[in-house]
Length: 227
Image 1 (cartoon, rainbow, N blue to C red):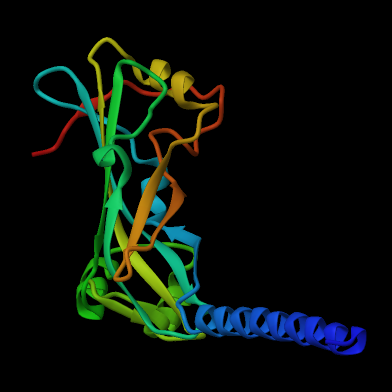
Image 2: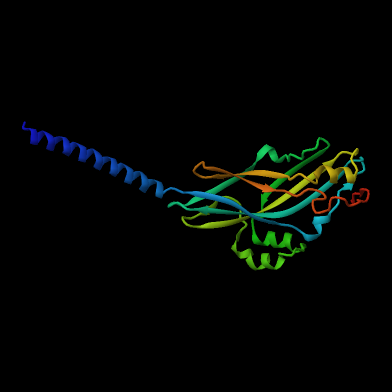
């Protein structure tokens, strides 16, 4: 074999190797482009306007309680080339909220409205500055439970019901609670589970008692809980 033919042979091997590498990379890119590519973003929460100043009430056992419910929305976007379905949502720590105070315990639960009619029934008793916008936009929300299919290039705005329960030890006064919570934020993590076993975590800022009260306000004593 001459030197020229040897060089030609080596070059042909190099070219073939590079061509195979390019083909494999192109194949990988093609396959990845056909897979779901998910993004989740918390976009807003809304609640009954009057609940911003809802006070805890005192139970017959001496401890105090605070319950609130509202709605929160997530945008689920599929930037990939294949449809994917949301199959479940799960909560971190079984819904237990870190309250940052040993005598205040709290939990949160997320759930699906399931139908627009169920949302309407829940929403009709609410009063909020954003009520007109919600009324006009609700047909763009996703209320159903899983599976929720998200097609390529599609964004589903999932609206979830949120319920919080707070229990306050009898040793704490309203001022104690307000002082303990004034400079803290409550939040909850939520996990979105998809049919291909993808799990995406996001977080939601939660509400807590006296959240909208100014720092130096004088609060009235807890009133008895209504039956």
